[in-house]
Structure formats: C-alpha cells, structure tokens
Image (cartoon, rainbow, N blue to C red):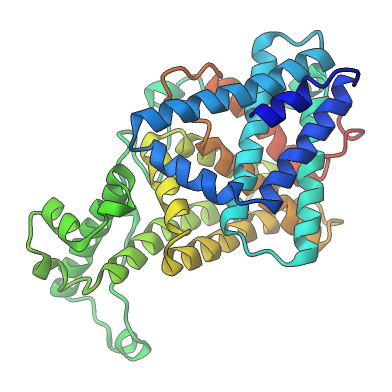
Length: 387
C-alpha cells in the first residue's frame, strides 16, 4: 500500500500518467511475485479471524481510496460515490486476476494476450466518461433483491446454505457398473444420503475452514460414527474430491443451462450468468467456501487440479458465448476475454459487501460490473472504444 500510495502521489506527474504507472506496478506484482499466494491465504484467514478481517477491510479501503483520489483528479465532475464504485470494481478486477494467478495454468502466448487485455480493460474503466458508462448500463439490478422476493435460488439458498436438491450426486461407478445399474430403492436412498453428506461437508468447509475438514468432524456434524461415514467415503481425499466436484458441477450445469442457445439474445444470456454470479458472490457462505477452496489449492494437489479444471470448464461457457457474440474474435481473444470476465466476477467475492464498514453501494457496483462484462465480451476495451 505504501508503494502504491507513493506512485499515486508522485509530484510533478499528471494523474493519467500516475494511474498508468500504478496499474502497471500492480500487474507486475501479480505476475512476478508471490503476492497472489499470500493474498489467497489472507482472504481465507479473514473468514475465520475478526482481527485479520479488520486488517483486510482496512487494506481494501486504502486501495480503493488511492484509485478514488486519482479518478477524482481525472474526472472532476464525478462525485465521491462514483469514484468509489469505479475504484471498487477496479479492485475486483485486480483481485480476480490475483486469484487466477494463484492457480492458473495458462500457456505463454495466451497469458501475454490476457495481461494485455486486462490492462486495457482497467485503463478503460479509469478513462471512460461518466455519461458513457451510464449509457452503456445493459442491466439494472432488481430493487427487490435485498428482501429476496424475486431472486432465483441458486446453488446457495437465501439463508446461505447449500441446496442439497441441486447437487444430484451419484456414487462413482465403473463403466461396467454403469451398464448394469438399475435404479433400486436402496440405490436411491444411498444417493440421497450422499447428497446430505456432501451438502454438510461443503457448508462445514465454508464455515470452519479446510483445517477442520476431516472425516471425524463431518461425521460429528452428521451425528454418525466416522466408520459409518467411511461406508460412503473411505478417505478424506474421497470426500474432499466429491464435495468439490458436486459443488462445481452444480454451478457449471446451471450456467451452461442459462448460456445455451435460445430465443434470448446472446448478450442477455451472458449478463444473466454474470448477474447470478454477482448475486451469489454476495452471499457470505459463498465467499467463505470459495476462499477456502482457493487457499486449499495452494496445499492440496486434488484441490489444485479441481480448481484448474473447473476454471477451464467455466471459461469454455464464456468463450462460446463470446464467439457467438463476436464472430470476428480469434480463439485466443475469446479465451482472454472469457478469463478476464471470470476473474472480474471472482473478484466480486472479495468486495465483501457484508463487511461492517463497507462503503461501496452494492447496486452501483452491480451495474458497473455488468457494463464491464458487456464491454469485455464485445472486445470494446480500448480507451478509444469507450470515450
């Protein structure tokens, strides 16, 4: 923060140049240091320690303040809230890129394209006029959002707990077992029990962290002996893998369903996925669960493989939609834009709207994230694309 503050306040330089240097420095830290691994651990730690959460909130407020001040210099007509919202969304994009760097497995040339697109997108948010961004708002947030009356229940319900019915997890079967499978009453009861175990395991991972994710702890939560739980999941790794696969597949199935070709325009389907992702990211249990998974990926090969594969599958959904929207985009451009959008939406998780001293409007941030999603998907991320 001291380094960033010094750059932002450097005397004898214009605000635009200071802002450009600052953005380049942040991306340098993301790409060339261990900052991503450190931040992923801190985000998970903050979910369980009030003191760390307070330090994190203070650091994020300082980061937003640096950009808000620069934005006020660049755009004197912007009010303080508008500067703060832009700064928050810039922070979300940076945090999402930090998350991606902590686990991403991206070939060299593709990553060069991603870094180029990411910098352009952030600089576009910095330089775009208020009138332009206001005119670009493609989707408004429903005013009924906060009481939950018109919300579609996603993987996590309105109370913040995983929805067991959405997982529909079946026991892993070999090809031969699958061929001979018959839906017996006993088999159905086993599926229901596995769903219950997975749901409890996922909620436990979110609320207590991966350090307490043990067979004994899950069994205690279920009210059974560990030996009973082992009839379904013999080892810790079996339970961890199944939990992550079930949760991830529930999200992928949902987003794939929304994104598939229909009578809705491509951009409308894209923004529906983005809006649902944004709303889900504002649920504290979701923030905690994904923070734990990202941190666990630093220590567990199983989790690291799952996170990478899940990210790749999610990017395919976005890349297909982008190709449908912009037939002129190359495969590399589609992948870079898809990665940038997923990073932005992941970064929303780190905005922590439930934090005690959060001063950023959730609804205003939603609108700007939707604008960013649409512009990135269209490839309109050069400063001259959005005056």
